[in-house]
Image (cartoon, rainbow, N blue to C red; front, side):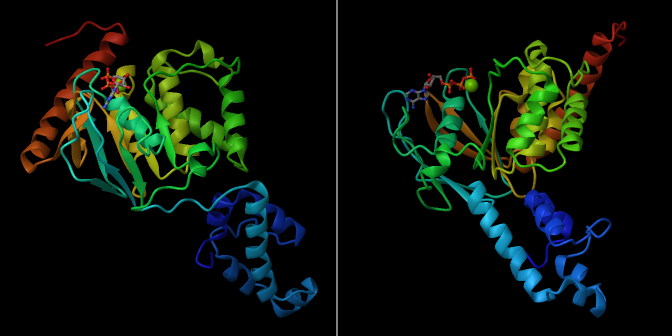
Length: 330
Ligand SMILES: Nc1ncnc2c1ncn2[C@@H]1O[C@H](COP(=O)(O)OP(=O)(O)OP(=O)(O)O)[C@@H](O)[C@H]1O
Ligand SMILES: [Mg+2]
């Protein structure tokens, strides 16, 4: 806490604004200082005016955060460092041929395999923190341990952010209402600017721009996907990100991935796309419902990736021209 700036404290615990207000601490323009630096900038007379000393203000701030967290039922952001998959069995009940697979923070893993082979199933096992209670019999460990049951059911501070293959909005809400609801449930203070940040990012991913007053039910597949990606990237603090089939929606995949992937996260993505598969450090090959192989992306493949990216760019430009109604040239 002591090395966080006020801005960082507020990002993490938006409710702290209440503490500053109660104590008549005007933090406007002071956001880049730590709380201690902020207090140290007061003169002795000013401190006397508070009738409370700096040390007490610091202790009370920590206590305030502690109590608010309890009250709101938030747990500290789960600073997890690894995810482990223990083998189960494939569709023919044959045991998977690996001992264990541990994925560390900041690793990107892709999941490849034929249609229907079980890629989405593996993501679902992780999301559910399978304990031999899914069709694959796999076990998922977090930091080497069986994770606490409670995060399976917690909707707020979820361990896993999942972007699933099929996105169906059933609610009759506008994009703004949907994002506001979501931002509020995440205790975001500045809902308006967060909402506009999300829609801007989403529109940078999607082809045809949409507006805040567009009903979510009338978004196209690509647009709703872009919206969910931007929403997850900006609102979710989950340390594990699961992505299913980013490529199907005609959105800018590379941009989407850059938005979602961040140093602190463990990222798994199921894909049929060679570029995305090779961006990953490792890939899991699924066959007949089981993990068949785990392949490390080789140097040669990384070289190949550059070529693939050039080809993707070529196709991307063609697609854009086509969409804009232009005549394509050689
Ligand atoms: N080990 C397993 N044992 C039993 N059923 C399994 C196993 N693995 C996967 N399945 C089932 O096989 C079906 C297809 O799997 P899944 O949807 O994960 O395929 P996929 O690889 O994601 O396909 P696509 O590329 O089309 O998205 C699902 O019903 C899933 O539950
Ligand atoms: Mg799938």
